[in-house]
Length: 428
Image 1 (cartoon, rainbow, N blue to C red):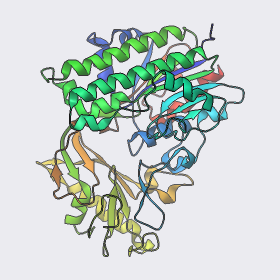
Image 2 (cartoon, helix red, strand yellow; image 1 turned 135 degrees about the vertical axis):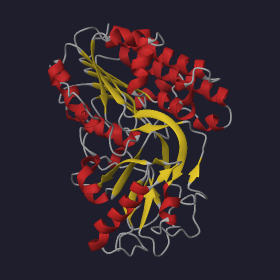
Image 3 (cartoon, one colour; image 1 turned 120 degrees about the horizontal axis):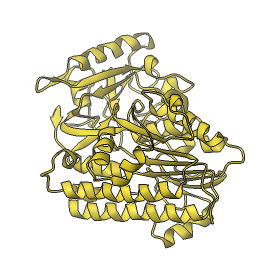
Image 4 (cartoon, rainbow, N blue to C red; image 1 turned 180 degrees about the vertical axis):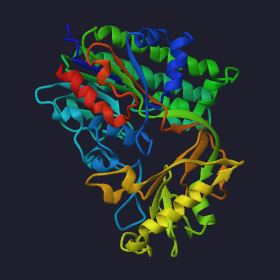
C-alpha cells in the first residue's frame, strides 16, 4: 500500500475562476463543489505574458520571467530573425522539486519541462514535448507509459477540421493522463504528486463559446469533459487523505474571442514596422526602417541597433520608441472599444538577470480581443478557428484547509505566490 503524499497539486490548464464557481454550484462538477467547501478558493492573476510556458515556469520556480528567463513559446535567436523555442534546459531558475533534499516527487504533464532531466522521483514532461523517451525520467518508465497508451498531447489540428474527431481525441488523451497518474501513484511513496491536465486549455481554445451559450451544439460535450475531470478530481482528493497539502490551480483564465487583432499589421499601419517578403519560418521580413515588432502574445520589441541585423534604433532612444508604441496601443479601438486593458512596461514588470531579454512592452487585451503577432497578416482584424483566448486576471487557486492557515494565503495571489505555498505545505 502506497503512502499518501505530503502534497498533491492538480493543475487545470486555462480554467478560469468563473468556470470553477459555476460548475461547482450548478451540479456539473459535484466533487469539485464538495472539495471547495473544505478550503479556500481565490481568483488569481497569471504571469505576464499569460501563456502556459511562462505561467507554469513561474509556478514551479516562484520567479517572474525576468528571473527564470522564459517569455514565450517562441523567441528570436540572438543577433538573428530566426525562431528559437525555449526548453526546460533554458529555464534560468530551479523548480521547487529540485530544491527539496530527501523529498521524492512525481511530476506529470507540467508545460515547459521538456526535455525531462534527472530528479529524485519521476517526471513526464508536458507541452511542448516532442518525444516520449526524451520527455520521461527515469527511462525505465517509458515502456510502462507505452503499455498504458500514454499520450503527450491532443492532436489540435483536428479541432480545425473535425470537431467530433477532436473531442474523441481529447477524451483519449485525458484518459491516458488518468492511467498515468494511477500507475505512478502506486509506484510511490511520494512526498509531492503534481499532475496537470492540459486538455482543458485545448477545449477552451476551440469551444469556449459553448461554456457561455447553453444552446451551442457542443455545450453538452463541453460540460461532459469537465464532468469527467470532476470524477478524477474526486478520486484523487479521496486518495490524498485529509491531512496533507491539497492544491488545485490554473495557470491563466479564459474568455471569449470576438475579434483577433493582428498587432504587427497595426504596427505597420502606424509606421513602426516595415514588412518585406515575410516568411512563416522566421521574422526575416522585418525590414530596414522598422522601429518595433511583436512576437506572440503581443510582446513588443524595439528594433535596436546592435541587437538585430537591420536594427537602427539607438539604445538611447529605446524608451522613447517604446512609449510611442504604448501610446499607439492606448489609442487603438475596434468597433469603438479600446483593445488594450493594460500595457506592461519592461522595467515595471520584470526584474532579474534575464531582464535584458525581456520585451519592451506586453499588451494585455480587454475581454473579447485576441492579439496575434503574425508578421504577414493581410488585415488588422480577423476571425480564426479559436473561440476562446487566455485572460490574465481570471485564473484560480484552491487550498484545502489544514496544511496552510487561511491567513497565510494571499487575498489576491498571482502564480508567483504558489511555490511558497507548496513549500510551506510540504515542510509541515
